[in-house]
Image (cartoon, rainbow, N blue to C red; front, side):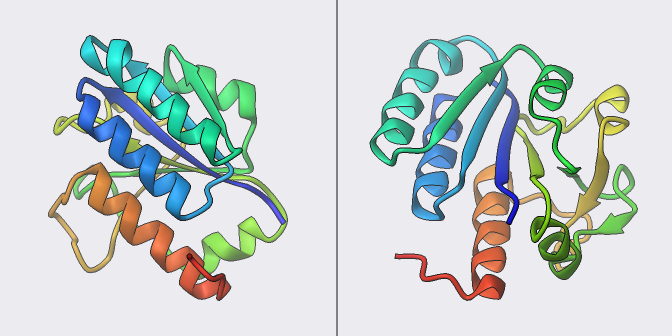
Length: 159
């Protein structure tokens, strides 16, 4: 079975890093990647996330940009969570699970309300959550929804 890799990209907020790290711990994510952390997110958020991830015996990787993360990890598939019109396809959890059965899957969440740049969107498959269509609940809620759906379908005990 492949690994689930959660990436928080272009983040300026300490709170977002810490909350995503908590979700990675709760849902037993194999690797949490922080890409392009800026300001207090880099100075305070990364050390806090590092402690949380260390305590759960999982891995944290901090990189300068999204391309660097993809080049280092070389996942089978990169999903970039976005909204319409940037993403034209909804995330299909069943397809993701089939891919995860064999290979590592990277799920990238935007750390800012601006989402991804055009160049970043070209690095993977831009997808949206079907029931949200053009609404963005933010990276924390999005990560929780996706990780819950994955664990539910895999029938893995979350606690």
